[in-house]
Image 1 (cartoon, rainbow, N blue to C red):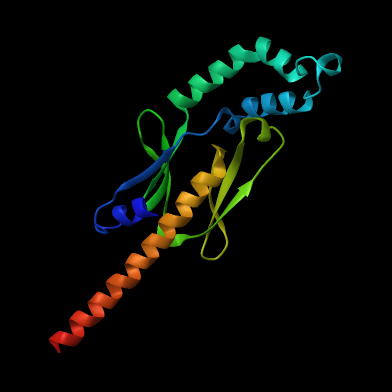
Image 2: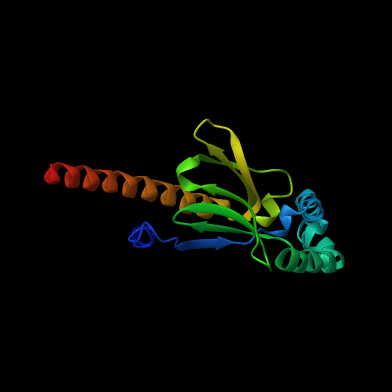
Length: 174
């Protein structure tokens, strides 16, 4: 929370809090690989390597290509003290953005295939509980969800403090 307080110390300036790159579970083929690996978690001959480990070797080039695709042509999720934004990975062009004061709830949604990559989709709900954004395939989603929730809370606290200061200023000048 200390980092967020520091980020909010200058509420008029946008300050970067966190950048998250989605896992390959954000891509349908990556999610399919996760399902394949999850479905073959039994051990060979009862004590040997897991079948998923044996399947990972011949499918590794697919995973590497998907990883490179994500890093070069995929998205990244950017959290600042003002907004949550989906940007393109290389050009940093904004694809979708939500102001933090419009964020009400962050729900984690997991599908088969996500568990292998320890990933989930984060659904961002607005003040009327409408889905405004989906962050697909977030690796270790609880950490990013907590960062978003703390940024939303910090922004609200700064707004309350600013309103109190404004009220005191107007009261002393009158």
